[in-house]
Length: 404
Length: 78
Ligand SMILES: Cc1cc2nc3c(=O)[nH]c(=O)nc-3n(C[C@H](O)[C@H](O)[C@H](O)COP(=O)(O)OP(=O)(O)OC[C@H]3O[C@@H](n4cnc5c(N)ncnc54)[C@H](O)[C@@H]3O)c2cc1C
Image 1 (cartoon, each protein chain N blue to C red):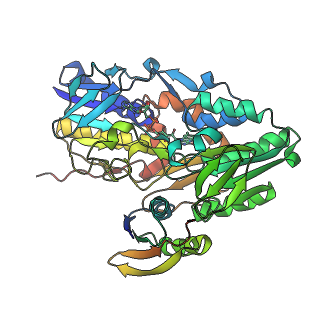
Image 2 (image 1 turned 90 degrees about the vertical axis):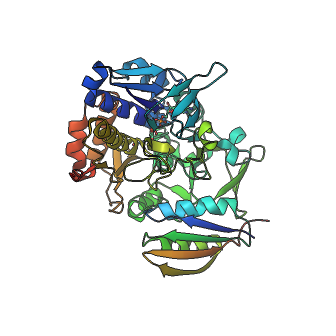
Image 3 (image 1 turned 180 degrees about the vertical axis):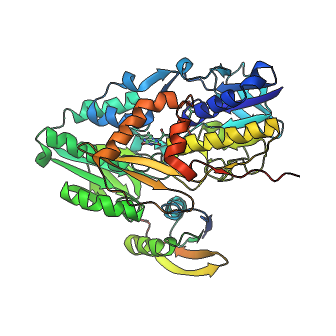
């Protein structure tokens, strides 16, 4: 019996387990393969929806689904977190006193990334973020809906963080909110970033920089947030520049799951070291990591987690049924950036192609909305035909292994 | 004084600057960051970043298929 352990039931873990269950259906039925997914969460949230919760007042329950509805037939669930992974001995240990050792033949780690307020002194006390949970995001809307005047500071508090365009989106969505409320002239919106441009990739910056100007969104580049003083309502950069705020919605730098920090498979900041094409953990052949938890040099976003999951599932299936590992991830990104008033652009690139220049449009916005509609079903693998058609040669690289 | 060696090869925009920022955050004035990158935008972007942050761009050279970019950290507040 080949045992496959998937750690984390988020965007990456779910699609990987669904794809494996579908392709190894017969082997699972015959008792030759088992797939177990570990995560103590009993529900999942559509994280891109945090923006809608924070800046449009969407009810958090609208973007949440119970895990049981998201797990595909053939996949077993253990509602416990993992506290230790030993790749050499091929076992994981579940959290807590009664923690159990569970053996595996293959492991896929998809434990995501989450805000790390502790990296910036004072951030936790002063800031409200829309990267932690739907409930936390809704606290922002409670505040926003009461603002009559003042300065709101948004932007990138530190790197890395998930969904690179999301801090830009928060500025655009606040602009829309206060224009519609008729008090935009009384509310200042300031966007800070440690990069040299409003959006780090030049092509997208060329598109949005003029929009910041025309919408009267102030931008401060090369601002590396160092400390926040909640009493004085000030943030200070590493270079010593100080900025006043009335309301602070910075995107904090992110961290990986705690248990990984103790293992030898991560870099000095805790990100799992993987091969950027086949996602295997660099020191082990039977271990893979996908999604936000890896150290690969592309944005941390759901589309990437999904495409990586497909590659890994295909290769594990190939290994088990003897056809070999023939699939590679192309580095394709597709992060949507809403620019307000029913328009959006996309940050699209691959390992070999730089980020494209795509103008915001209503069509793009509609594409983003379609993605939201099909998101939950897509985690079952129901829309791979559509993604294959949409991403074309970027969906994956496929090379038949050379026959011996 | 510490030297931070940052390997950003294979990283396309915005990668190398993200890696530079991660090292910069941990550094102190007087430290050196050596960034290895093969993204052609890395050299001009690092130059601009140094000008804007008042850190020192100490040079770049081609090493095999990559650029080795040296930055001297100078502008952190005491
Ligand atoms: C505001 C916002 C906007 C976004 N917009 C977009 C967008 O437009 N497009 C896009 O593609 N992406 C977007 N994303 C990013 C996207 O949601 C994530 O990149 C994606 O969810 C990553 O998938 P993952 O599987 O790596 O991690 P996650 O989906 O975060 O799942 C990780 C799972 O691991 C579990 N876990 C953690 N530790 C353990 C442990 N020790 N043991 C077991 N389980 C554990 C967690 O409970 C969690 O369920 C956005 C994110 C945010 C916050």
